[in-house]
Length: 62
Image (tube, rainbow, N blue to C red):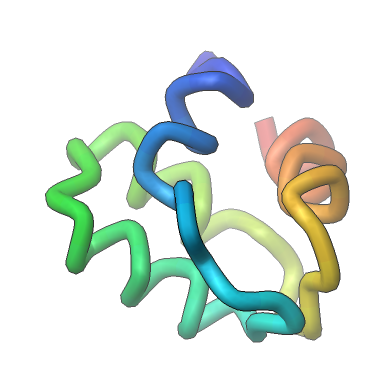
């Protein structure tokens, strides 16, 4: 399980709202490791308006 803190580390500075692909692209641009990218890819499609929304989505995906 990837921690919310670890995911947040690679999404620091992201502009919201952001869709799933924008979140993944931002993490990739910040050299996120494969485990972080994998959990982000499991999130539902849609717009995310805050880190809390992303944390909730990855919590469901895990």
